[in-house]
Amino acid sequence: MRAPTRFLTNEKGERLAVVIEIEEYKKLLEELENLHDIRACDEAKASGETAIPLDQALDEIKRNRKRPTDA
Image (cartoon, rainbow, N blue to C red; front, top):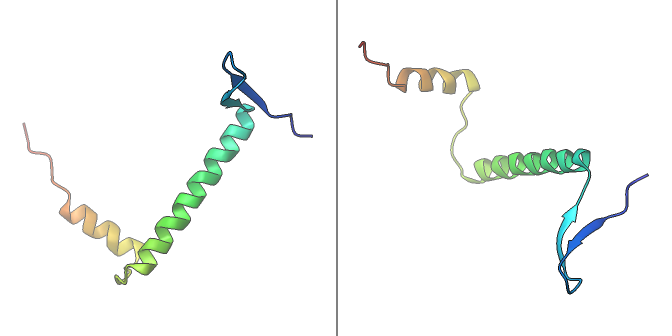
């Protein structure tokens, strides 16, 4: 059973914040991250750019990464 929603209020009784259980907070963060990933995927598809395989992308990143100079 879900706990009732609790609010922090000011002296006038106006709601200022919501108090939720930590597990509910973690669940909300995970769902938000999932939505962010979905949005990023949709934007990538809509960009019209050609996708490349992950291995190829990683190889390109490695090749373009600056190598530390010897001290």
